[in-house]
Length: 80
Length: 139
Image (cartoon, rainbow over all chains, first blue to last red; front, side, top):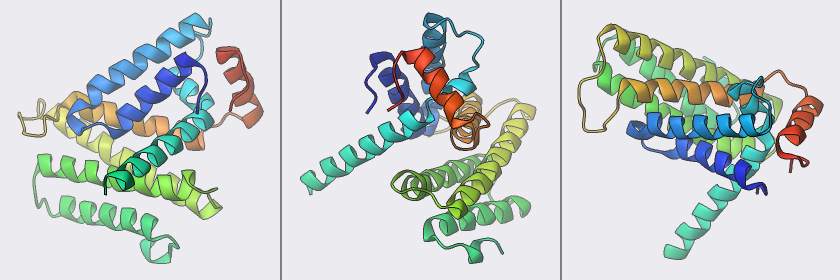
């Protein structure tokens, strides 16, 4: 799981984008783009593209996503 | 056929759905909105395969190959849909609430996935930039 709160928010926004309903994609995309831009600005890395940012945070995102899916499965198995 | 040669039923399912979507498209069977819904369903299947074959386990070379292949197919299909919807002046109001901007956002999401799994940065470079951004080692 990511430990930096800013990173955590970005990973959550990316997860939300991937898992939201099709009719909410544009809204979730805007949220993700805004968070990435803010992180790049804060780090003084505005020369880094948002897509490169995605690439750089790939391992953290995969770890985050795995943890989320496991939580969802555990929640589902508890309700059965 | 590519699908018949695959080891994982997950990847096979994605391939079969993409092939069926292509056949339906060629036959002009269902119309624009159902084509878009089918594309979203294929992405859902792809995400399930990605989770099972690429995230929950260490992906084998064949997994990476099929991930890249089906992802490219989904991006190409999404770009085609965006072009056609733009050309026709947008999507009619629909119960799923899908708009052109949602299609565009989803294509961008797929390009992100390509960068995530098949990007060109070397692992050391990724780690170095990550540290610069977040002042800590990538977990």
